[in-house]
Image 1 (spheres, helix red, strand yellow):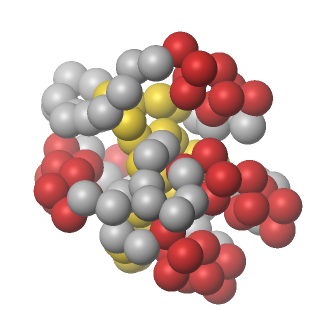
Image 2 (cartoon, helix red, strand yellow):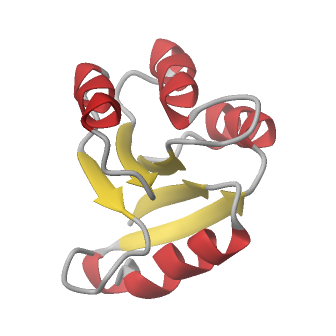
Length: 112
């Protein structure tokens, strides 16, 4: 089973992702979720999940910054960006970091 870590500063968004994506049905297990990006960074470096779903805009550190920091130590981790913003600049920055997908919040079952 593949492992997933969820990080978003909004609790409702974590709930939304966890209950919209059929993780268990497709062989994924959510091992942790966090609303604090700094704590998430420490957790992710320790737990080494296969996939990280990260909000793009969080206080103090952005999801893109978080991805950049994690990729330095865990280059094979797969990232999915969560965003309430469909701004082109965010998407291009995410592509430069080679994220797997860019999902707009709130998520809908068809896109999960």
